[in-house]
Length: 343
Ligand SMILES: Nc1ncnc2c1ncn2[C@@H]1O[C@H](COP(=O)(O)OP(=O)(O)O)[C@@H](O)[C@H]1O
Ligand SMILES: [Mg+2]
Image (cartoon, rainbow, N blue to C red):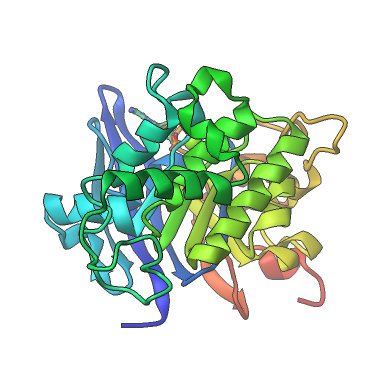
């Protein structure tokens, strides 16, 4: 066992379509430390959602996890039984799914939705520190209805909502409030890892920042690591410590966020950062010429080479694996030394 909270090794997830296998996640490896905030960034269709859903073993046909290993705190996720996996999804890894704020049940009060998420499973596990047990009853057993009510109100307060929100229906809430409810649901079982898939993409910039601040605060309180999925490098810069850049199902750069902003090493990371929109014009990624490749008919060699301003014949001929080119900086590019003078 290591100090890593999450380890992902050589993960491959394909969608088997009549036209062939869509390699949505293709040999992805990365680690996450306990409590770390990690960003997964890339254009729409680059495989971000597929990757995080695979960590939870929630890939549905025609998708399939082809190979790879995932460990959470030394636990081999791929080897768990369905029942163990269900427990892990509830209490180990929490998901704020893409579009989740619009999939709250419209005819159920917020309190009910919060409680339903916790009720049967919340206290199945009795391990953890006294701090982590906060919110459980003294015996570590299931909570009374009154205690669940109180816990629901407490959760709402912790994400910056009034306790009265418990009695409301989703349509009575703004987008930002709904997203806070989703975060409250995610933290209710004190997970080790929170996955938030584009949690703020439907919100305006000011509300985005407020929701991200809330996520950061509760994440620190709970001591959970976070994977934030998004396409907005600007938002990543504000929130995460390290970022993994995905292109066509592959990680092309994994670096500390400060380093990648100061000096992106992969040409695609460079383009993503150049395209960070100003507050006035929020049209993401408009500046990147060309289109992402079809994941069915992929280019030879480096998948980015047809769009890369630096590409050479070597790039079309051969793929470069992700390698640590500087301490803590992983890049998959043949040209990293020639592009970056004084490397
Ligand atoms: N159910 C599916 N069937 C076939 N292809 C899919 C399915 N879901 C996703 N894909 C394909 O997998 C790729 C990655 O999708 P996704 O993980 O949603 O990317 P992202 O979250 O980065 O936008 C895309 O090319 C997408 O078209
Ligand atoms: Mg997605």
